[in-house]
Image (tube, rainbow over all chains, first blue to last red; front, side, top):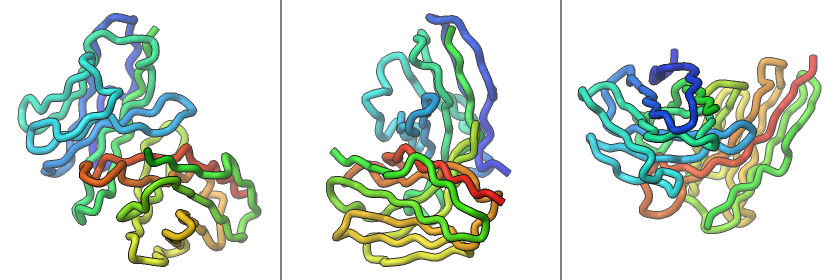
Amino acid sequence: EPEVTQTPSHQVTQMGQEVILRCVPISNHLYFYWYRQILGQKVEFLVSFYNNEISEKSEIFDDQFSVERPDGSNFTLKIRSTKLEDSAMYFCARQGLAGAGELFFGEGSRLTVL
Amino acid sequence: SQKIEQNSEALNIQEGKTATLTCNYTNYSPAYLQWYRQDPGRGPVFLLLIRENEKEKRKERLKVTFDTTLKQSLFHITASQPADSATYLCALPRGYGGSQGNLIFGKGTKLSVKP
């Protein structure tokens, strides 16, 4: 059973369109993360979110990206105006209960930008 | 900045043998190091975490070592099975002061276990 549930599993969009990817934690956690993985490349950190605020973000996470927890449960990643190079798998993750930095990932959302 | 190298892109072994995967890092020694398994099209799955003051960690058929002098971790799967075939990722915290879940991942080693 995945630790977090992500939707959609696959989204195809046109360049310049807005995309919202969703993450639903199975249980109540405070720390969440978004990572992405371009096909054939490394898993890359995008942003960490703690207690309803961004706590850290990478250089990839520019003004086109935003994260929210609109209803205190679902956790969203929005890409405002998609580019071809945004095509990737996007993974939501929560931190392990031991708090030692281990991450538990969702199954991912595959984004294809045409 | 910290870099991770997983020296082998692919490793092919026979069922029953021990698979040994290598992870090297280039800069400061991290407080801990993690190993994940990733199957095609799926998210990484956490396997083991080893701290800088631990030389070795075991979990069932898995064993991880951590040598801060060599700046290296070895990941072993004993009595390997075809079901162990996957890509194995090494990950480190990005740096001091960063959030714990801000990890740098290696590119991974794709393990194939032949029956």
